Image (cartoon, rainbow, N blue to C red; front, side):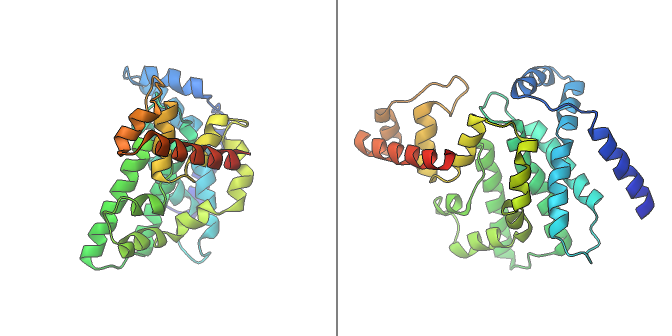
Amino acid sequence: MKNYDKQIINKKYYQDLSKFDTLTSQDVKDLYILINQGDTTARNKIIESNLKLVIHFAKQYRSILNKTESIELDDLISEGNIGLISAVERFNPDLNIKFSYYASFWIKKGINDFLMNQADLIRSPQKQTLAINKIGKVVESLFQKNQYEVFQNDIEELNQFTQSEINHFFYAKPYANRIEDNDDFKADEDDIFEEDDVNYKLKQSMKYLTSQERTVIKMYFGFDNANGDKIILQKIGNEFNLTKARIQQIRDKAINKLKERMQ
């Protein structure tokens, strides 16, 4: 496709975005009731309302690429759209999480994987490549299960991979790392996520806890299930083979961490 043609398509794409309303969390839940009944119109509405999120991340990635690279913005948008569609298919509306936060993971993953393949950044022995692929699947699984971003220490605590394999997985992804540290994204967050959203802030703060602390908090406050049923300290202790007093210490330490992050 010629560059001129791409510019025309992108211009129309941007213009169309203005027609799509921002959905509230309740809107998303209502639409998923229809989606579960096979309503493709409801599915498309969620996709369309989050296209601006794809644009946001695509622009961030493009801004850190070398200007001499042939990868264009619309290429990144296309890969981000694939990630968004994957998010719509995987999202569980019964969990207490904003769709935009959930979709961000899959959008960034789609774009980053595309860039990694284009740049051929991973030149590893076959054994290490297999381990990296396994780590990637574990990261996806943990994110899908726990609904928070997976960090290096989360993988290290599993004791399933060598430190070299873990380091290679996380540090061979410079694009993703730089996007997470980008100040422009922080400045624009209010345009994407609802302001004063306590639940969103809590989810963001949870990533600073250890995996054990997160599990204790989620079980104690009932974040682990749709009914919101809380689990008493003694039962949590039984799960970890720890005393009630020790679980209470872990809980209190985690709560203090969350308070500091949410201030």
